[in-house]
Each structure stands twice: as structure tokens, then as C-alpha cells.
Length: 89
Image (cartoon, rainbow, N blue to C red; front, side, top):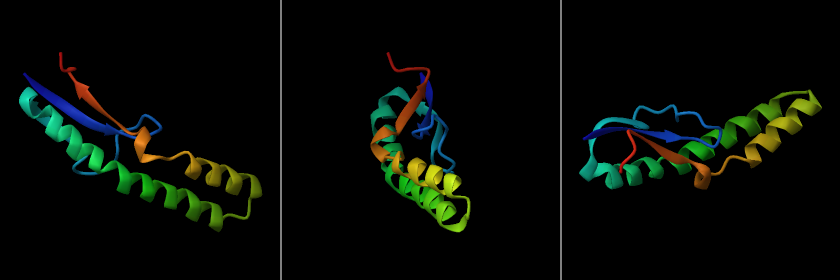
């Protein structure tokens, strides 16, 4: 059986990176590919936090800035997950 594997961020979205989705993964390679995908979580989380913080710094709207800083604080690589379709039995 072959699987599609996707790295999912803390908001439930597929990480937008060329290597964050893998197609046709054989069942025997799922664990190895899962580890590879989870290794992308740290850099993606850092990039996302920086985007929120940069937006907060560039806006004069205090409420929006506070919202962006709060969003940045909620992005953690440990909350990313790998979605496997179909699931491994």
C-alpha cells in the first residue's frame, strides 16, 4: 500500500514547502518519512513566528499588533503533526 503524507501546522494547514508533502510512500518507509517531515516543523514554526512578529512591528494598529504577537506565541513545532492517508493500520 502507498500513502500520502503531509506536514500539518498548528492551525491545521498543510505546511507550504516543496518537501512538506510526499506522495506514494510505501508502508515500510512511513516512519522514516514521518521523521523527515517532522524535522521541517522547527524551521517552519520559526519562520511563521517571525512573520507574525514582523507584522506586529510594522502596524500602527495596537489591537492588530497584540493579536499578531499572541499568534506568534502560539506557534510551536511540537504541535505540528504528520497526516497519513490512508492511515497505517
